Length: 344
Ligand SMILES: Nc1nc2c(ncn2[C@@H]2O[C@H](COP(=O)(O)OP(=O)(O)OP(=O)(O)O)[C@@H](O)[C@H]2O)c(=O)[nH]1
Ligand SMILES: [Mg+2]
Ligand SMILES: [Zn+2]
Image (cartoon, rainbow, N blue to C red; front, side, top):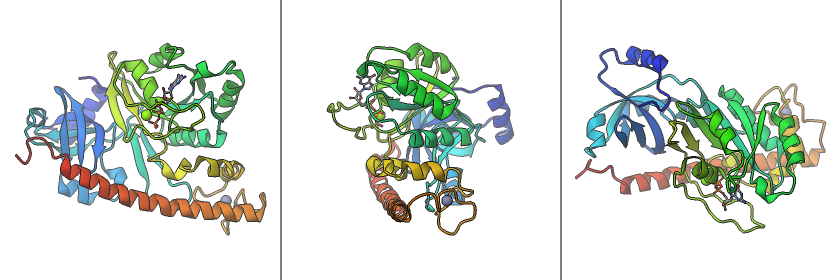
């Protein structure tokens, strides 16, 4: 097993489990209350104890994709004999959390222990610097260096101008790729590679899963898009994959989980200027109303600001409704998708 495990992780593990009674495994996918974990011997179900679950103040205290956890009954779980039991969550080296853009929505963990963050934007659609900037911010806040990727360059005659725009956003590395032609993939493989963990981020339809398929040949569902269509959601959950070369990759669903950011792309673009100004507000959750050191108030038309506030409020309410609906749907699915062997 490598999956990114190294001597430093071993030291952390010995602190949490001096007797070495538990097995370190990595969370590969989340299903409310239960997880797929990957470790020595393969993939199996693991579960939290009620105690761990109840003691968690919010989702950040619970395992998420990419986390290292110590489990009991791993061998049994591998044999399909119930789920392994998560006894400890090892401290994260890096941690990506979606913070609510304006309103008080609880923080949503995206991935843990990521080394490289690829932010994709496709060459054949409008580039939103404000949106890219938010991904870059999310990665940097989590301790991860962003790499901006211009995808589908096979669809445009000249990507030069778009690449220059991307460089202006991050000041970091920018890579042009075509998954269909295989261009730029070696550069991405060189960034990732054995023991490193790379997360793919970006709006729905930019080609994250297609890239992953091209890189590691995992069968990730992709969807054919009509030429004029903006992306629709295909990938439905975050999931961790291991490449032949030992590199670890985390695919994410475009904007479904990040609903509050860009569910309504068009609407948001109408407020790009406000979003950009808002980055200089003193408070991250500034409502641009009475807050001190607001960079927006007074800079834009008051009526536009009012509709922006309205949109932000609607979106917060929508996100709350959606997460409740999601909770119910996932609980239902989890009940159906019983852990093999557990209840038989
Ligand atoms: N021409 C061309 N099409 C591509 C390329 N990469 C992806 N596509 C197409 O773009 C569409 C969307 O690709 P996906 O990989 O499903 O996009 P995604 O980012 O995973 O989308 P979500 O899972 O919804 O977040 C598919 O029809 C792909 O075939 C590319 O390099 N060139
Ligand atoms: Mg996908
Ligand atoms: Zn403000």
